[in-house]
Length: 164
Image 1 (cartoon, helix red, strand yellow):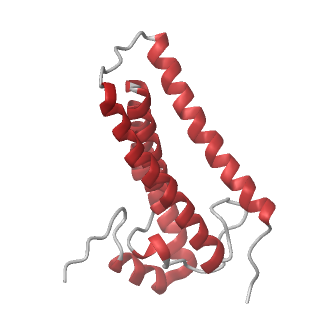
Image 2 (spheres, rainbow, N blue to C red; image 1 turned 90 degrees about the vertical axis):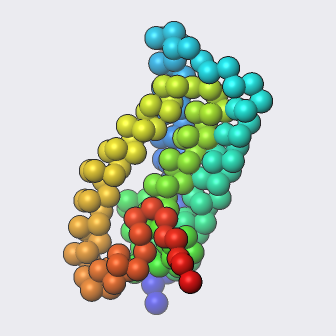
């Protein structure tokens, strides 16, 4: 049985993600000011952004925990899981970390009433959907073959809704 990677590797990956997300939000707010974009006057409605932000934080922590405990790896590209992780949020989403990050960015855009952050989130979604996910899924199919194909048939890309 393989051991999880070092705590340093885990923390490095978490810091890298946090820095990237913070950078996107800061860039969005800067673009709002640079282009004098009209900020939506949502008032207390902006607090609804706490819902996707909180869901995203929970999902990020839960998916990272699943990588660590079930796959003996981290989301950090230097420490890929040793096996295909299908537990936790991976039982209903093939890409819960991407979903978590989009939720956090969308929630931040709402809270800050930042149209540029919302647009950057949409652009990031398009890159993830059409560039990153196809590359990642091809790599996983090559690495885990039939096991990944069965998983892919059972669990949808973003959110699996099971009907009984």
